[in-house]
Length: 223
Image (cartoon, rainbow, N blue to C red):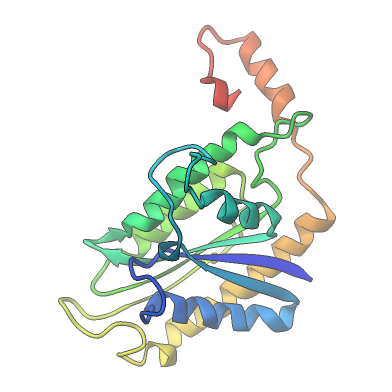
């Protein structure tokens, strides 16, 4: 069975209702019959300080979350939209994932998120879903995730303040339900493909080739 981790970047800690969680739960339900076990992690329930390292020491609980990410085959970031962009918590998660560069495989140089599949779930009012999904998928790809076709699903309400996903009956919205199904099937197919056929690219060798013909050098964490 494949393992997915769904990182809910709502601003609200449990047990407050999260519309983003509701859409992520729908996605998890669609992936379950396809052979995927999904673990949800609400970031606001943990003490995760700002930073770009995988372990800041002290009471930092990011290492626990990071271990779950490393153990997963599918990584999903769920975010509400605030002021037209992804949440501050989603930005925090991406910044903490920056620390994964320093944990490259000593032989191949591949980053820890290589051979994992990435996807994004977005909820909110007005607009911003495309920007939030596009930026986050771009980030996941740079950390090493493979991004399948149609790797996002979202729901947004009408312009101006108004009801959110659950309040507005978003679970009955045709486009969102279609996108969730496209996303589920593509995530699972590519995750299974990568599990059986890992990406062979040797980043360490390619880095040495690039270094030999370059005047400047990458920062150490990107070597």
